[in-house]
Image (cartoon, rainbow, N blue to C red; front, side, top):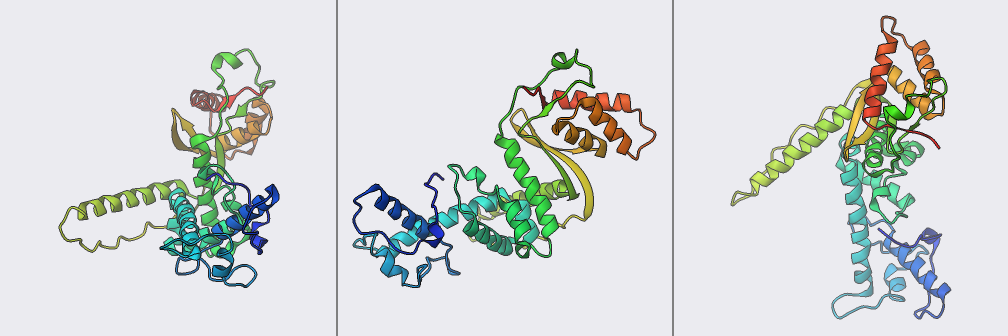
Length: 319
C-alpha cells in the first residue's frame, strides 16, 4: 500500500483551498485526503459524520471532492474510506489467525482497529502492517485482557513467520569455511530471517490446530455450496487454548518454505549467545554450565546440533 506519509494528518482539521496553486497546497490536500481515508469507520462501517474540528464531514468533504450524478461528495469519499479499512483489517485477519483465535473475531477486530488507528500503514507493502502490533499490545493490554501474555507469545510467533518468509539472507557458511578456525576464535552470525523465541505457551502446536480447523471449515463451506439450498453450518468448538509451558523455538525458512523448530534450552542458549557476537567456544561453555542435565555427552550432542544448523543454512560469516 504505497502512499505518502501523512505527517500530522491525525490532527489536521482544515481542508485545503478548492484550487491547488503550489506544492505546499498540494501537500495540504494530500494530508486532508489521508486524514479522511485513514480515520476509523463508525460502528455501522460507514464514514464518520463529524470532522476532526466538530463540523459535519459532509460540509468539509464538499470543499475538495466533487459530487457526480449518482453520488454526493461524502458518498464518493466514503467508498475509499471503507475500502481502505476493509483491506487493512482483512490483511491483519489473514496474517494473525492465532491471535484472532485467542481473542475471538469480534475482539480481534476491535484490537486491529485500535492498532491501525494509532499506527497507520506507512510502508509500500502490506507485509509490514503488523510490525508494531507486539509493541501496541504491550502498551495497551486492555485490548487483549485477560489473555495478554498468550496473545503476546502468538503475535511474536506469527510476526517471526512473516520475517522468515521474506526476510533478507546472507551467504550461508559451509563446513569448509570454518574447518580451519578454532572454536575459541570462531564467531558466526545468524541469518536475518531467523528468529529465536523463548515463549511461555506452546503456540506453535496451537496455531497448527487453528489452521487445520479453518481449512476444515472452508472445505465444509465449499461442500455446502454444491447443494441447491444452503445448509446452516454446525458451529464447531473452538480450538482449546494452550496451557502454560515454556518452549524454545527457531522460526526460519528452508528451500523457500517457513518452518518452526523446537529447541532444547541449551540449543537456544548457544544460538542466542552466538548471535550476540560471542565465540562458538564461549557460547557452548556457557550453555553447558547453565544446563541442568548431567548425563549428556556434550561433545557429540553439540557437534550434532551444529551439523544440523549448518545444513539448514542458519549461519553466515560476519564481515
